[in-house]
Length: 446
Image (cartoon, rainbow, N blue to C red; front, side, top):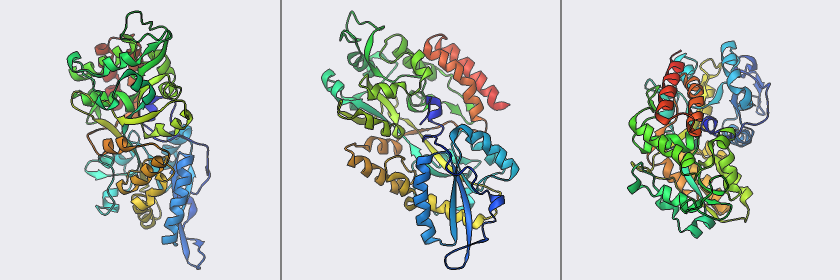
């Protein structure tokens, strides 16, 4: 989905090439001037997103919608991820933004605050299908809902069954803790990590400079790793819109992760994972990583494993306060400047429904936010011999919010350099967290 873990939480699905870069805008289509097969007027509603695979699923969904609503057609415009966020404010300012458009939690707040969005609480009210726990909360600001949840991701643990069976490790029983007496994760990782001579990290003579198999993807990964570890130790990433990770509980969580890399050598070096956020996933696929904590977005890559080894999906690693995972959603926003508010409301209702989102799940490439559509995703992967129950259960379990706020991206960019150096071991954890929190909060206040 992305080239770096911090960006992984942002888009949820991979960026693609332009499908229809010159598609109609609210101010250019006129909508009501088209003529349908029955001679009546047809209104065109434009829908913008950044992913070509999702675009194909939406094409099928909107075809079914138009069968039920022949007076409305939905035209998809795809703007690639590399240009999406630069183009969005320009098009809103120029009055050329699509009627409905995708966003993530880091980018919608400023448009809600500026009055650019339809109030979904008013457009849909409570008359909609059930969505994943917490997904609507991510797009609720000042008491109103501003986006219709579309895709969602929860976190679970991919495991190499062949390696774990050989080491006698049960992936369902793994829990980390700053208290060594309660920590079952580190001992397991030391058994699973081996050097080129076959010596484990639990044994004398282990060579950390020549590791063949690492235990776990402890790394600078916001979505799959450190927001979860923070929450599991009673810490917060944010308090309101401000960063709040520099607490005793936050320091302990980050120290644990940094030590897995630099003290115990049971996770790939940060110099490598900072440069390539997908390296741990690549190592898992190659059989060089025993445990890989990640989201549904990593499932398609597992097809490359073939028959090289057996693998499965277990619940995410637990912490002192249990299994608490970040749940992030992509949402569809309604443009307040649309010329077709009634038709846009019909489309928003459709893409918020289990029927409308079922097309996003049927090929296993996206986990829909509509709860009643999620079985189609599970059924697809069941057909591939993959049990995705752990993802579904985590999405319905204890969750912690993804980054929020009108200037969230600016804040994440400000903290990024400090976190990179912290995972390298170049800056002490407590110092890095203080500097990062100060820089991040300064950036979001500007």
